[in-house]
Length: 338
Ligand SMILES: [Fe+2]
Image 1 (cartoon, helix red, strand yellow):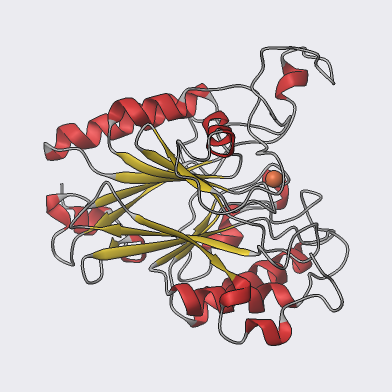
Image 2 (cartoon, helix red, strand yellow):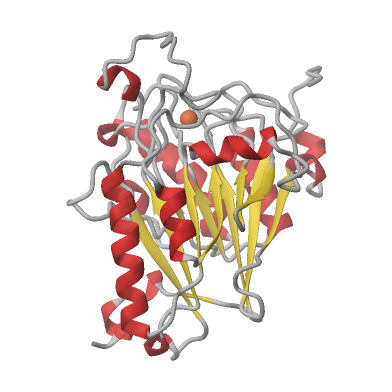
């Protein structure tokens, strides 16, 4: 099998200078019946200029009400939020958030942009937008296999407690603290990760170090702010982590595989925390959107820097918009103090 012909050219990602920088952003929350705040694409551009990523991953919640009132407005919206990456020739991709409905967020509208690497993912999995992006060491070296894997998951929309007959408020005493009713990764996706990761190990005779991104934080994310000193927590918690109500075992699978170093989520708009639990960094990015609740103090994205020299210990920092050159001049809400 020839990986050079197997993978279309635009999907081939490579280390640059022995590193790969992935910037995670989320929670743009555009309205359905009018255009989005014009600061949103400018904020994304300022973040890109500061973080200089090799890939920008959008962790979802594009449209607050699931879909826009016209296909034209949706296409203009995707073009507007693609533009900062497209003009800088930065590859980008996305997963859906709990607010996003598949009918309102067709993958092909994203994928039509030349630098967009989004794919719908296997039909055998629940939802859409669960897929894997390989990062190769260098051009021409594809046959050696990826240097890194970037795993992306649809974490679905609400209704799990309702689906399983748990009333709201549940009154259950043993559910994890702070759980949200919105979505979560399904066990079928956990199995897909396990099997795909093991198949790659068999194919290349080594484990491929990787990171994960998804919209809804895993239940294990909430352990970071609950144990700040034990987990070496950095960043801030301004709202409880909106974790999934049901634990599909994705963290346990990542831990047992032993090749995942970081798991980044969106969903919470005013959290920027990160910490290490069982050797894996769990982090959140703050929301970037201006058409929804948020914080001008925290707005930004999480930058994970994968390094060939130390593949299981990536760099990680939340890039704050307020610290991006020029951003303060035009990006903050007038008179707002939060
Ligand atoms: Fe969300």
